[in-house]
Each structure stands twice: as C-alpha cells, then as structure tokens.
Figure 1 (spheres, rainbow, N blue to C red):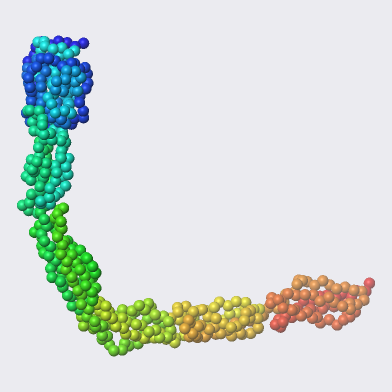
Figure 2 (spheres, rainbow, N blue to C red):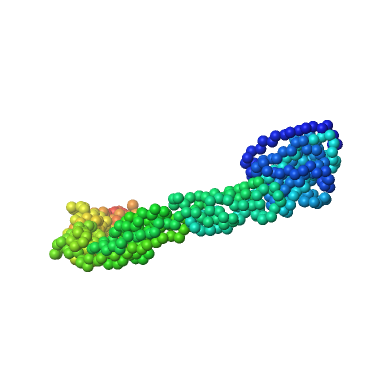
Length: 550
C-alpha cells in the first residue's frame, strides 16, 4: 500500500565519481513499472548543461508538472528523483505526443532505490523530450515537493581509425552518435570535431616538431565530448647508401657507409649477391661473406611510421687475386711406419693475399694399409684459388709376432692326445696372434712327437715355436675276472679257454699261457696266463687244472 507524505522541500546533493558518470552506458530506454498519459501543467525548460555526467537539479519541483528538455538523437540522458520523500513516477514523451511514452519508470529505477523513479533513454529523434513527473498512481499536485535531476551521459565514440599517419595525409573523421546539422535549440553542440589539423570532419596530419608527435582530436556532441589520439610521423630522411666499393685480393669483408637519419630508422638489406650484414640497423655495419670475384648490392632503407620509405643502393665488388698459394717446401718428405700413421703434420704454403695457408687433405686417418698411400694436400687462399701437393705415407710391417711364452710345456699322456690348446703370441701391429699347427690329431704314437706352432700376423710376418707331445703307456692290461675258475677232469685236459683282460689304451690284448697240452698228470697243475698290450705292458694270472681220476 502506498502512503501520502506531507510537503517536503528536499534538496539532495549527489556526489558521483567522474569515471562512473563519464562512462555511463545506455543499453536502451527504461520501460518499467506503470506509465501515465502526459500532464498538461507546464513547468518550463530544464537543460542538461551542467557538464557531461553532471546533474542539473531543480528543487522544489511540484508533482504533476511536465518540463521540456532539448535532446539530440543517439545521445544518452538520465532523469531521476532519487532521494524523494514521496512515491514518484516519470514518463518521457517525444515532442507533442500525449500518449505512449518511450521511456518511463514507477519506483526503483536503474538510478534509485525504493519508491523514487529514474530513467535512462536514448532519443531517436531530433526534438524536445517532454518529461512528466507525478506522484504514485499518476496523481498530480498535492502538498509534496521533490528534487528533479537531469543530465547527459557520455556515450560518445570516435569511430574513425586511430592508426598512425604521415604528415600531410588526410582522414575523414566519424563518430557515434553522428553529427546533426539542424537540431533543437539549447541541446548543446550538434556534433563537432576540434583539434590541431581538424577542419570540419577532415583531419590533415600536421608536420611534427620531431620524428613523430601525438595529436588529440576531440568530438563534442550535446554537452559531452570524447577524445582520440593519433600519432603523426614526419617523412623519413632521404637515404644515402654511400659510394660503391672495390675490395682488393678477393676480400670477403667490407664496411658500409650509409647516412645517419635525422627522422626515422635505417636498416640494411641484401638486394643481390652474397654477404651477411652484422648489424642491419647500423649505418656503418660490417659485411662478411662476400664472394671473391663477384659484386653484391646492399640497400639502405630509412622508414618512419607509415610514411613512404626512402631507399638507396650501394655495390661492393670483391676483386679476385687470381694467384694460387705456393707450397713452402718443393717436395714433402715420406712418412714411414710399420703398422699405421694416425696423424700428419699439415704442410704450409704462402699466398700473395692471404699470407700463410695451411694444407688440408681428405685422406682419412689413421692410415693402416701396407705399402705406399699417396696423400694429396690442398692449399686454398679463401679467394677461390688453390694448389695441391702430394706426400707418400709408407707402411711396411716386417716384424713377426713374439710368442707369449718362451718355452711351451710338454703335453703328456699314456694313450693319445686328442686336442691341444693353441698358444698365443703378441704382434707389434695386430695385438694377440693365435698359433696354428699342421700336426694331425689325435696323436697316438708312443714316444715324443714334436708339434710346430706357427704365428702369422695380418701382414704375412710369421714366427714358429715347438711343443713336445709325449705318449708313454706304462699300464699293463687288467684281467676281466679277478680269479680264474679251476678246470677239472678225470683223465686229461686237452684244451683251455683263454681268459680276457682290458687295456687302458683300448688296443688288442694278447693272451698266452705256459701249459703243455694235453695235461694228464693226476693232481693240480698251475697254468700261468700272460696278458700283453700292444705297447709291451703285461700282467699275469694263474688257473688250476685238476686231474682226479675217481
């Protein structure tokens, strides 16, 4: 339920920060709460001319009155009764319209709280805005009084480019809201650009005092304004790359001689030929990598902002000397070794322009091939001139391997030797050499067999060493039966079955006995059996022959 208030004379001072006022945004017309038809009681004209974002205040203001406010299309305006002691309503109409306000608010608008009213609006017309301020429920009059405030908010923007320019260039200036040529009286400036170089809507870039200068353009519309900064550059200093140069003796280095710009920045670039610019931004930069006998063209370019650059070229020619280096020694001495040559001392030559030149070779090191290797040394003076010289590297290994043991130990066995451990020797070039022998294995011959080991290095040098293999069988055969069984008969024994024995060397065992057959003697006759191996080793065993005629 809304309440009446007694007449109150209210003066409210609003202290708002400049940034919030100047940057107030209008997102559309306020249309909230109830709205009323237009009032017929005229208060007068109120101008939002206290400065952009500052309020023009009218107090006391009687509810139910309307006032006229001159406005410009696209500008942003605010009307508010913030702090009012009564419930208020605001309606904004175009010109002479009596119905359908385009902006209105009943309580708690975007700028106030509580029952006070406030509106933001952006006119689309070039006319007066008619503002109606009432009490609640569209009531007019009464004993109350309020303070009404109006202002223009800064929603201006310069829309033309702020890009840098060169002195003398022109640019058409544009802004929003756009300027109007015919507008309501007392609405403020209809849209004008001001500043150094500005004429109407054209900005002609002035000539800066130095290489560049920043100018400020101001756009004023109504009672608000906004600014834009544009940096203007002077035309760059005319480039001078200096005189053409000739470099003697196929030189690859030169010094450029460009002028130092008064306005702008210089930079060197390579137009044709070869060359590396050490410091491109220096007028007197060093150039390296010139090609002897050829010309290179370099360009000195001076730029300043967006202005047209100034350029100048210089040609530098490296004159070829035409003479190759001369070796300091007419004939290079041979380099000799038995196994390899891992390093060579580069010879030198003398050049008419480059002084001492050290030879280079593409031959890979170390050199290990037996015989003579021809090494080619090349002397290059850096100007494309070169000469060559050869040198013999002679590798001749004539040293045989040396056995690692002074005397090889005998290898002994009773029956045979089936394998031998090859001995080793050390070679001056090839490291360890393993011996080889032509003796066939196994060795079974009784007695001493002399084995000859041969050590041969990779270069065909060889040495020999002997080793004794001794085969000495001293073990007699072993009977296969520990005790021979008695042979019995009543009258006589005419034959005996020879027993057997096994020899350690596995050969044939000859079995003999001392019996004279037949054996007919009554009683026991002892027969001695003899086992003999192929190497003459023998053992014996007895057997009883019993004749017992019963």
